[in-house]
Image 1 (cartoon, rainbow, N blue to C red):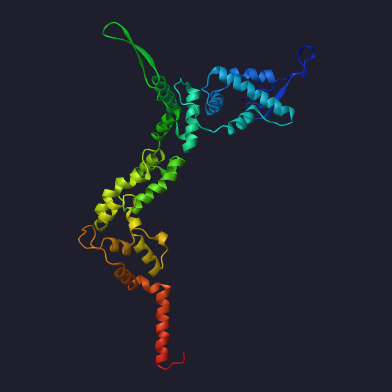
Image 2: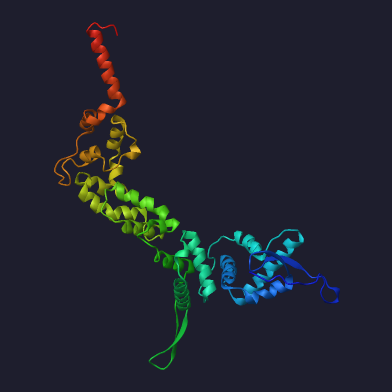
Length: 358
């Protein structure tokens, strides 16, 4: 809100003392405003100001209307006056911020109702904040499209219509009240996600991206492009799928690529190829002295162990004893501390046996 600083006397008509509060002018400067003037400024509030009021109302379980907005505005002004009297320089928007911080920040009312642009924008902003969607990616046209869509959907839910029957009578048809503003707004926002650009994913999807990549990596799935992987993360964040479903979705490919593990993957539907490979991973980590978190299915030793003849699947995996022997005799083992210590001990023993005083 920006109110020009009026030049008013300290006393009104008949010597009545006026009440003041702090506000800001059009340049953001702190100014003193008379209470009644501030309350009357409700009629000139801009769109963003009304969206701020609607955000509080929706978070408080009340669907915005002009009467509720005006009542809220007057309460905010009263709060700013109270702050002024205690010597605090709190503007009406500071007061609203305090009030907003005491709400759950969620859409509390999902029942059938009508929306205008400001209440639609407030709904969109609340949901976008909750899922971490950057609303600067939305154009004015996008916001208008959302307002039209949510208003139509809300009106169609719980709608009562009269239908004339073939016998000349009337039949009342009631559309079930299934509209949920939060779910509707979430689905609309998810559809606007820029899939090719991971940096522009909502934070909720970014958090899911790691889970998706882990499932794909641990099942040896490497043929998906970035946009496809991001889409899976969005679906996971939006609740359209879950970890178990993703694992099941790519299990057929894992079975095809790792035929020696086919039966074990079928018997353990919640496990990945990497889960089943853990004994071999532990052996590689121990005998080649590699951080186990750095070992994945692309490791040549692990790949050769899991599928010794590739995807043909005719040659069974070696025993763990044979695999460890292979690791210990590999070129990479020569660089390990146990191999170096062993070579040093052998050299010392040989020198002593040859009569050198070591």
